[in-house]
Amino acid sequence: MKLVGNDIYLRFLEESDAVAKLQLNLRNRTFFETYLTTRGEEFYTIEYQINSIKSSMEKMEQDREYVFGYF
View (cartoon, rainbow, N blue to C red):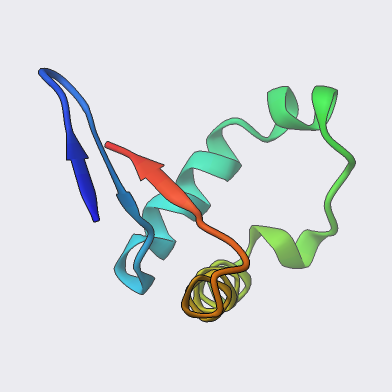
């Protein structure tokens, strides 16, 4: 699924998005942790991000969770 606007589009995350997801979380770590629970160091690894995306994809197949990326 892909929703397209003038300057942005949404789509389900894919394993190939793991590096960008990790970079986003690293860049914004201080800001995010102000509003979210503190995450362990393992959250800030590529392995964690890949597994997180894989888990979301499995849940999507079961109609339990839908995780989108804004691009």
